[in-house]
Amino acid sequence: MMVPELILFDVNETLSDMSPMGAAFAAEGLAPHQVPTWFAAVLRDGFAAAAAGGTAVFAEVAREGLERLLDAGGAADASASARRILAVMQRLDVHADVPHAVEALASMTQLATLSNGAASVAEGLLRRAGVRDRFAALLSVDDAPAWKPSPTAYAYAADALARDPREMLLVAVHPWDIHGAARAGLRTAWINRDHATYPGYFEPPELQASDLESLAGQLAAEG
Image 1 (tube, rainbow, N blue to C red):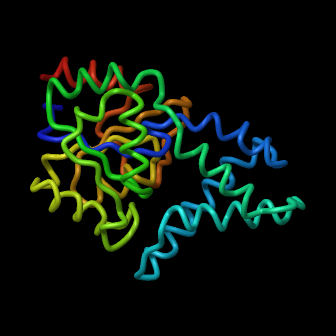
Image 2 (cartoon, rainbow, N blue to C red):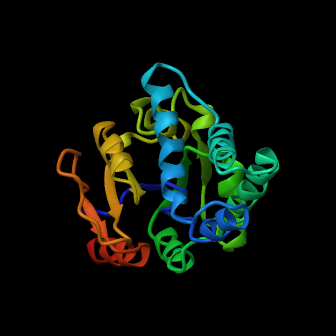
């Protein structure tokens, strides 16, 4: 694969390390193992809004989902507890491999992000990592017709970045994002941090790596 004209990163879990969310859940009386279930439910409801022809605000879906979990768990003030948990999410750091990999990739091509969350979250995340200036744009589906993996989300990014989709490489840990981007005409790279098996019913990624540094190495070898 030749080095793409632009690399478009997913943000949540691809760049951000969500492991501190377990302690945030525990501090409010929830079980750490509920984090993936909650996050999957947030994505499910955002996808449902997109499938029905509408959209939703990530922060609102996340907050209401947390409040339901907390109410079910007997929290004294579910609203306050949800706010504290979400405050932790807004202060997450990147995975350890991200800063060095971003520097390497930025030396090869242009970088941008496209998140189902707010652009301000990506802004803070990348500033804390010291790599914000390596990104030409931080995009959010808040400005698109629907969440990823709707084709309209990727079309919005291509238009905003003045790129043909075929010039862009979507990098994500989520197979559903890889599938959506591939169907929208983008090239794709799956970051398989957990050594999982890629679903056979989705469009396969063009590239696969265990982390971003490995992906940078692959692209450098091709370049």
